[in-house]
Structures are given as C-alpha cells and as structure tokens.
Image: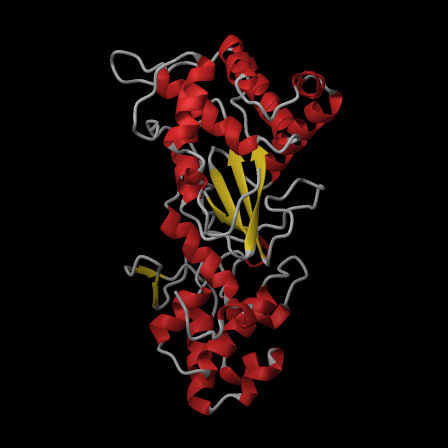
Length: 352
C-alpha cells in the first residue's frame, strides 16, 4: 500500500487516478472526494460502573473542559510516591509536588488499575500495566523542563484505557515504521469507510505505521465476503487503491436521494478487476482460503476481547479511541507518544 510519511492517501485520489478508475469501471465520477454518511456498524455499549467515584480535583481533558477526576482512594503522598519512583527525588521540591499532585488526579491508563490514579497504580506497578513506567517517566521529564499543572496533566491524560494487543504477525504499512503503531479497525462494506480514509489522509505518520483489522457486521455474509476480499487485495499491497476504488464506485452509484450505492458481490468483482496491480488468480485463491478465514476469525475474537464494538475504531500504541475520530484527536495521541522519544522531536517541551 505504501504510505509515505506526511504524504496523505489523498495524493492517490487525483483527477488522473479517478478518471482512469472510472473509465475502467465504465462509470462517471464527480470532482468531489466521496463522502459517506456517518453511522456506526453497531451501537457501542459502554460498560456500567459498579461503584460511585470518589470526589477528587477537576481534571483537564484534551478539549480544555474540566471534569471530575474519576480516581478513587486517598491521594498518595510525595514521600510514598518517591519510594516507588526513585527518580522523583531528583527533581526540585516544587516539581516533586507538581508531579505528585498531577499523578494523583489523572486516572491510570490500564484495566489493572481501573478507577485509580497513576500515582496509586505506580505504588504496585502491576505487570498488566506495562505502559505505566513510561508514562511516569514522561511526567518527570516534562516537569523537569518547567511546566504548568494544566500542561503536565495534558501530557499524561488519555481519553480511554491502554490495551495490550498481541503481535499476530500482521502487515504494517509502511513496513519500516517508527515508534508509533496504530491499529485501525475497518468494515469495508460499511458507510464509515469514506470518513475513515479521509481521517487517515490527515495523520502525521512520519514516525509510525498502521495495522488494519476487520470488524464485520454480525450475521451479514456480504460484509464478511467484502472483508475477505479486502484482505486478499491487501496481501498484494493494493489495499489503499482498493479502498479508494470502493469509494469511487459508491460515489458513481449514488442514488437520487444522495445515498451511496449498495455494494454487492458483482460490484466487488467489478472494482477488483479495475485494479491493474491485482493478480486475479492469486486474489481469488486467497479470498476463499482458510488462512484469510482464520485471520478474520482472529480479528473477531480480538475485537470481543479488547471491546471493539464499532468500525472504525482506533488504537495508538495500544491507547483506545472508540468509534469515528477526528484526525486532530488521533494526531494528539501520536504527539503524546512521541514525547517518549525526544530524540525524534528535539525536545519534550513540544507538548500538545
């Protein structure tokens, strides 16, 4: 597929590409990039809290609004935190107090420390929360450079939890990626495909890559067939061209009321044949293979385990963002993760 750092997918969606693809499909195209009405594949179901949250200091969330911190338990003292995080003592007293205050109000990122603060989680450092040490070290580095309480909160605050995603040997695009690994869950048959591709176009993946996984509509055979076809095309390095071709087909088959065309197996075959980079015999063999069926089953099982309930869904280095997201929200998480690699960005003072 060949993502180029800072080169959006939209570069392929040029007038020449569109015209050639439309000619191959024998359809007409508009000059506008395809848009798809926003509708989740399935309605997300949020877990219910089993206990009321303890009252705590307000927490600054990424959009700048103030919410009550959901952490429970008494605050951890500076002395107790220094016992668990020895590097804290290297800071001047003012910065020690600042770090202690912030880590006491920001929720820990892992399920193992559910509804507790980073500070309280740091006392036990559970092995299930392997991202916690780097998050604490990030707070120490930013505080040492000089910062405010609000700014320090922002660099350790995430909108959802961190999830350990197993390495299943999936293709990463580009293969030689940096420290950022994004997992994007797609339903290629769904109405959110255009918005998802548009979001990816705007991401800064200079130091990162993407793994694509597939979430099909339960009980929908066509959704599963399209996902298998997408995986077969991806194996030939043609995923990006294929997804754009699907969008071109939908745009060209818009209904009178403005809705996009409904995909079918015939339409799918039409799109695949239009792509010169796809070896059709190899594609057909892969599409019906046990290997691709097994990969799709793995994605389905993983989605259930890490609570992916709708497509698209995104993970940035394991940090979850449910549902459709703006490019700015995803780029913020990318920027946060790059704070752990100051050699790539020059200084940790460049915080989001």
